Amino acid sequence: MRSISHVYPNPGKEQIYMVPKMQGIAATWIDVEDHQFDPPASKLILELVYKPKNGLPSDQTAVSQEEAKLAIVLDVYEDRLAHSKYFGGDKFTSADLTHLPNLYYLMATPAKRLFDHLFDHRPHVGAWCNDIMSRPAWTKVVEMVEKAKV
Image (cartoon, rainbow, N blue to C red):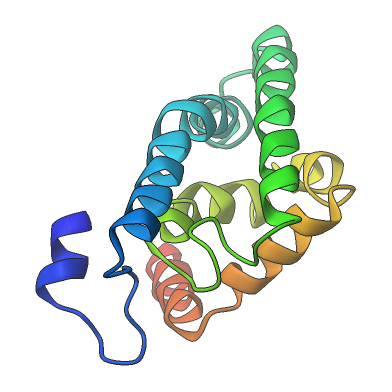
C-alpha cells in the first residue's frame, strides 16, 4: 500500500507526504493501526459479525476484553485527532485509509452498538470516522460490497 501511494500518486489528492518528517508521522500511524487498532477490532468483528452470521454464539468475555483494548486505542486516537484532522496531519493519507475496512464492519453491521458506545462519545474520533467514511471513493466501495451481498 505504501509503495502504491508513491508509485501512482493522484495529483492533488496524494495520500503521501514528500517531506520526510511527515512521511514518518503517517508511517507511525499506519503501524499503530496495524498493531494496536486492528487486533481488537478484528476480534470484535469475528465475535459480533462473523460468528452470529454463521450461527455461532459470541464469546461475551472476549467481546468485553477486546472492547476494553479498543477503548484504550481510541483514547490515544482522540488525543491525536484533537490536534490534527487526520492521523498524518492535515490531509487524508494511508494512515487513515487503513482503518476503513474495520470501521465499515464495526459501523454498518450488527456490531453498530459498539460504534455508538466506543466512537461517538469521543468527538474527534467520531468526526474523523464520519469524514473518512463519507469519502466518495469509499462510498463507492461500500456500494459495491453491499451490491455483492445481494
